[in-house]
Image (tube, rainbow, N blue to C red; front, side):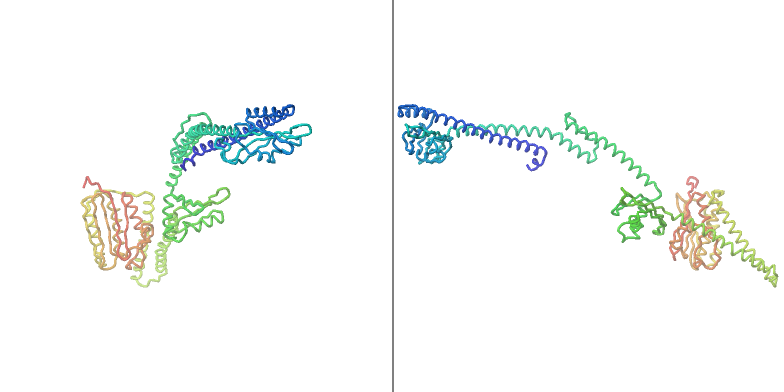
Length: 599
């Protein structure tokens, strides 16, 4: 029930009913009051005219007694009581106006409102209403059942005889008027009940008729709010409600078009953000990350790991942007990587409501810059030593500082060795430059694996025996042949085995292994000193060298061997990788695709 009164139907229904009840009540009160005034004025006027007419008749009649009897009969016809009094207010004649109830005449004459004294003095007071108390209730008269009798009375002057004045008092009960008002009230009540019932049904029908399309609009609006923009309101009328339905349908259509456009724009923006190499982060006014593409998520994950105590990512830079209102650009090291951050304020009507940050992984660029600088330094360092030795020993020979032929031969041998070393360095640099430029010449041929690997194993067996290192060969692959450039592949394996022997202590072991079915895997494993984790990503860079503290005192290489090996394997369409634990050993793995049909 409470739901009905809260609805539009209930409110409109109750408004119409309340308005009708108010109008009916006011109309009834005004109608009853109008009847009351009209009947009262009419009865008062009639009674006063009657009183004046009787007075005139009594005054002109010579036979007062006959005239009084005639007036009494006349009063009976008009249901009017008659009392004639002299100057001393003594009753000299009366008529009760049957069928009037018996009333106390003395009480009537004593009423001040009757103004009997003024009438005896010759004045003409207006009729007045009174309520007389009866000695006992009159059950036959409805107006006197409660012991009181409402009457209307008037007193007019009367000249009884020459020099003697008196007054004529006429009175009527007003129960007829009360009965009339009762009938009018009953009629109004009956008409009001019928009209109220009819109005109730009419108001409910009208309210339902008006609110039915409104309920449809509400349901359609709810469907639109849930995302069903194809919902449509049926238009059944051409009035304001029909125009409202048409407007809502137009709004839904345009909203659907707008949402489609926004969805497409959002998808395009999301696609652009996902395809971007740079990370994009948008932070709102409360510090919440509302937009982040995959590169940015990777950065934020590492940032949260390093800064778990910050309220939200990039808190310090966000505070600088919000407080200063200017762009912030800085390189940030996070988890071993270098990120370039550019953060700008996000404005909304001259107010900062957040910030947008663009993050770029500059690790490779910074490493390349470092490599360029290191390349010049390393080449200078690698060339300076043999050149210095060549210059020094050649000066000793030129200045005849060599005393014996043996010393002369020793200095010449040193000059030769350093020139060979310098030539090797230059040749490796030229070879690496040609490889990185894509000028790798391969002469592939079908190679029988086991004899090829056994030959390389024998090549290093004596060196391993001298260093007290166990060098073993294990061939478990079902492939008997493979297609590659044997000289280039031997160059790669020679470099890897030489590095393994140089970084493996005495009583250690080096394993050459060939395995794999669909792919040929060549592994060079050692139990040497290993490579630090932070150096693993750079072992294939130019001039990378293991820490000389982990070598066994033999002359180190140029640091170009692994870079050349990687370029050779890449030219073969294979891959080379490294796994190492510090103090436990290192494993280099080469993968090469083989033709399984010819094996």
